[in-house]
Length: 224
Image (cartoon, rainbow, N blue to C red; front, side, top):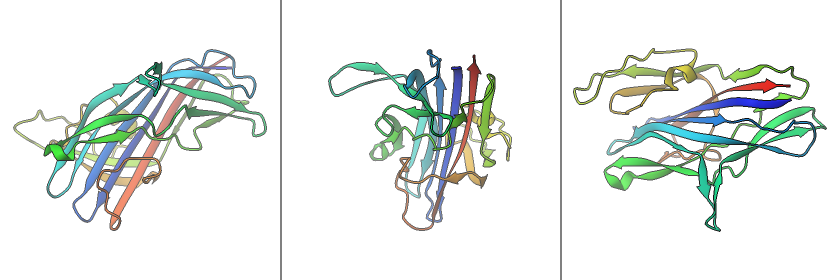
């Protein structure tokens, strides 16, 4: 069995009573794992990490225009593709997908004023991003329940984009949008899972009166 293609999405929303808000859409487009996943020896698949979003507080705002990263330069000044490891755990009879160097890649958020510029870390995949090893070839998918709500706001300086509110498939709703925070408001929604600073960069997140939730979705296509 091999992975032919896969997509992983995460929507991260943080809100607080102090006027702070942050929204991030992370997506990973994963290429073939190549070799058969048949032993504990890890096989590797290249991927592209994409990011968009925005946020603000009472005195500033920031925007993450659609950006992507497919390679990085290491400390030896060598450019390498982003890779994740696809490994068969024989003791648990499951296949796991793990990034090579999580929390070491960053893309930029741009602030207004510029002092609010800040990097955003690549998120770490959740522990349950795995497949049972006896899964028959075909698509395997997962999606957390609920999701954020999106409301389009008319701004004469920006195009008005119609976005469904309260969608039960948030990954489909935002996958191809160019999100500008001047024209959208984002609510926390329902479901999801706590995903705080261990696995995310939440800019200026207050220590009290705040909530951060993430909704994960993935589709993994398998072949014999």
